[in-house]
Image 1 (tube, rainbow over the protein chains, first blue to last red):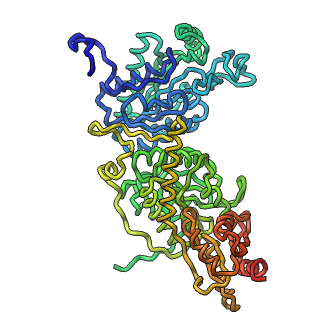
Image 2: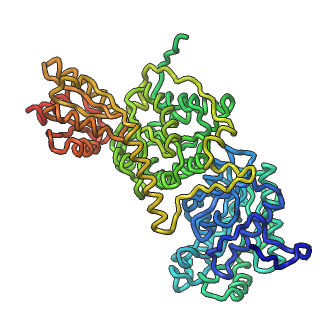
Image 3: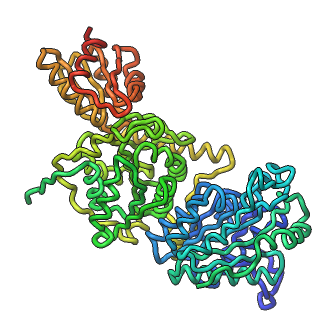
Length: 252
Length: 360
């Protein structure tokens, strides 16, 4: 029998109904858990749990479908926007969104991402940019910063060898099919609130069939970066925000 | 009512048949020799009649993943391509098999390897029938040998795919795709309504209505035992398919002393070679596998107890011949004659090969 710890009339905060009790596989300090919670909250609050179809990526969020109780499809690496395209075309009244990391969206799935956006598919793309491949153990990503050390750039990313950090959302903002891009973060309460508002706005755009909406969450991977969660947050603010400045890139 | 007989290309017949099969969505990328399929669909504008959508994707990689998404949401979807394009799709083939979702692919083979040629070929038998993508999976493979069968098998492919929740490939060669023949198009079947889709495909992701448990389409299971369970379930389904769905055609086999085995256009040429042989008093029959998976193994075993030798003919270096040899299991000589790179042999060439390699 469940023990009631708090008298229901004293409850001021609950986890979103759509979040189940499966134990998360994310590392302590990782941004994914916070973003998952925000997505579940927004879907709850919009009352669209019966309409929502999420597309999970390959990467750390490959198991997103284990934590949020909506319909999901788990795509091959980088292909989430292609899946979302078809589902959106075939079920136009549903709320279709992808959840993708930087390797998935900005390296192996660049073509699928750009063309889904260019067709203005009525989908939302939640883009987690933590500048590293987390799932495979911390290799260089397309968004890895110059001089950032990873297991495949042990001396730091050198642009002569590996090119520059790819600011793909700035590129996507050029496309007429994209109606909304907001670059946010989830390292403190103020930014978490802003990210939630951004996700809500993106989902509302999708429901209103306004085109493609993108929320880029500049995130930490403290395990991959080999830092404590607190140090990772500080490192992100100091080093990533100058390269990926927060704010609304597009709102039409 | 009298049936309307139309003259058209195999590729055009596929497009018309897809609309009539109640297909919900086509996603494709142009490649010779099958571009007429998407062109015909764009011309007949099914979104204005049946509501079927047609979308030109940015690549074959995208189109097969659009199939994954669309099929995973319970809709009847298809794509078409030719050999180099199908190579790009193999990642998706494997994921679709792993996720156990039904869809239809039409592959109009051209000569390879590499960019190869746009001329006809059957050199992708291994690619489609034996896998190509990673992991243990099978695809129901239908091999049409006429424009009529291009139309009929497009419809059949949807039925088989949804019956077993597997991918079904219509594996044609460039000759069948490009040649014009008489065809009676299949009757119109209405597309499934949304309610029918939800009833027929309770596993699909169309939104968890009325508070049902979430549906998840995935091919991932990190625990070895769990992944083995999935594999065992797939293998059991493939065994069921092998039991129920073998299709083939026998021509002049009752009294045959010698047998020609071929599929697609090779069967048409092989049949002519058998007829020429009969004019010379040689009793030659033809076995035409229609399903390449499941393969008509039992029929080959039966015929190898009857004939003195088998000649397999394909537009390749010899691929299906391996399955014929496995079935014949050394009972009779199994020899091969084929042309490659887009060259199509004449019936006389095949008859000569039969005489040289088998009859002697």
